[in-house]
Length: 139
Picture 1 (spheres, one colour):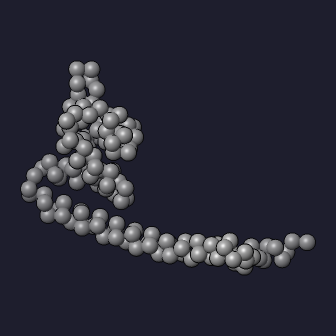
Picture 2: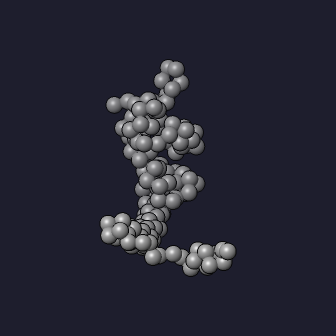
């Protein structure tokens, strides 16, 4: 099946600008153009784009993604390097997930605190020390 850039943008939840950027930088090497010079995407192009979006969303720099995609096109002899790249990205992503889980714990404590304040009609007894100190200084 073929898709226009607008259809791809909607389907992949990414801007047409980003898709053009990736294409213009050689990251979508198999995208064809129609008689009007419009990009025409096939399902296989969407697979490439999905990978690009995944890697960008997990913090991989565009240059590294481009290098990875070049390696894919070079063939089987690049599998060891691709494997190492994906292992490193996996590790970074797991670290980020761990950090986010720790942040979520803090947020959950705050949500529970405010729910208790609202439900039980309590006053908010949590005031950070720097705010409390500033209130005490006020005349």
